[in-house]
Amino acid sequence: MRNWRRQLLMTLLLGGVALPLRAEEPPDDCVRRIAATRWIGAGVITAWGLLNWDYGEQSMHATSEGWFSADTSEGGADKMGHLYTSYVMTRAFDGLYRHWGAEKKSAAKDAAISALLITGFMELGDGFSPYGVSHEDMIMNVAGSLVGYQLATNETWERRLDLRMEYVPSGSNDPLTDYENARYLVALKLDGFSGMAQTPLKWLELHAGYYVRGFDDPAATDHRISYVGIGINLTSAFERASWHRTSTFLQYYQVPGTSVRAEHEY
Image 1: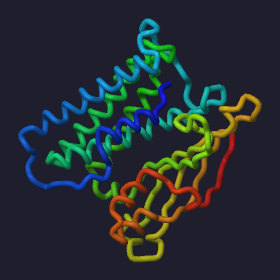
Image 2: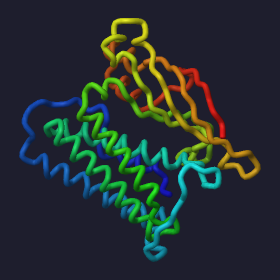
Image 3: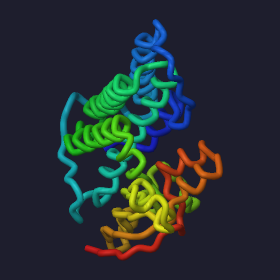
Image 4: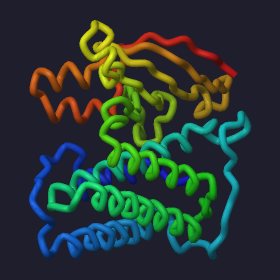
């Protein structure tokens, strides 16, 4: 398992989800720029992995970390993190490549490939560290990139569906691995449906999510929790107020306290 939030930090360094788009034809150097993001990503991973992630300390090996069962180290929260991060990477690179002038579908394809190459290279590096290559992580990386590609190329569902993380800072010594205060969810925005866009229902969205508690404390009872809920459509509210960057950010981040949930614990 690799700390997926560090992957997300690197995404923010290499690209952005809220860049303005340009409609003109791709510049001649667009392909070279796309390739450069991949090489830069690989270089950053290699350098950082050697310095901080114990790359090179062991020979190549693989491991099975399990999925969402109670006997895993994080109850599957880390797997949701991989899905979410690969998704955000794909959307971030898509925005960056379109900003450089790439055509919509081509940008989405190259963005998904870039996200898979970077997360795959990172997972390969894990194979030479105490972590080992995890096929579960790779599957979730692929799934996140595919979801990102589908939404980037389908305007109808892009308006309707968000994949988000909710996080409440806790003062943890290491907030980058603070799964105890994170939730992962899919949000279905009702204003994306023509029959509801002109009704009060446009301000609502339906949620389905997952989170864990107690896995980081050996003395605590482990809890895995799935839920459904109803939330306030803040993305639409800020978009209508012309706060476009805030609206874009809220497509990926769920503001705590803006939904009600019915939970199932197991």
